[in-house]
Length: 258
Image (cartoon, rainbow, N blue to C red; front, side):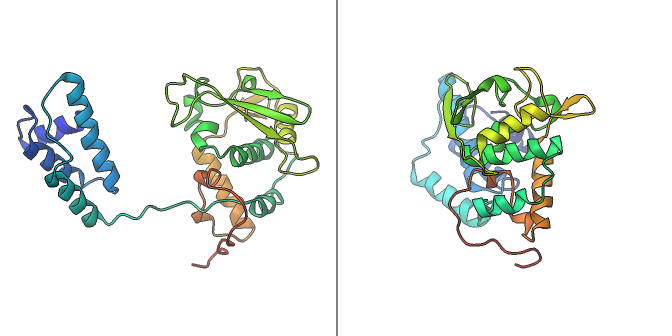
């Protein structure tokens, strides 16, 4: 609604009553700044939802007019999503070989990587965007993990599909004795090297007596640095690579190759 009102003020369009013409021009206006056609649809359908809440009239978006409008905008943008390359167990083991497991930072980094990979988690589930934006209700804390004899159980309180946090999803991860990819040993290593309270971030690391956090952008930067050290094209990986991970597929290109 805010974007629509800004558009109307900027363009000198009367915002109410909402008309077919004003919505069509709004969608066209969005195409100048939105890279993805789906983003334009999200804005327009969001405006429709706001109108429904207030009982305002709104044009029918299922008419041929809007179908052709969205189709034309999609063709004009020709957007192809850029997908992060998935990590796989062989890639993770190469990455592990470049880490110093006597460093609290590397131990925490590795725990984020292993847990994120095995949970198919989004990076927003694991790490805060900035140190000051760590939210106990969203990111994992140490009290969100239960340790059993042969597994760890991680309780996810929040996710992109559970933004209200009205349910808890419990995910058991079975230990893999003797493997660097063992989730239980990774988490226990963090707790031993960087002890803290139950309310502390799960992956906080200790540095000069303080517990510090790895942020999302910091994690991606360090991940790419280490992947480059093993000869991979680091720029094709991102934080979403953990969620896209799975059984080994085609080998990623080596550094410097297209």
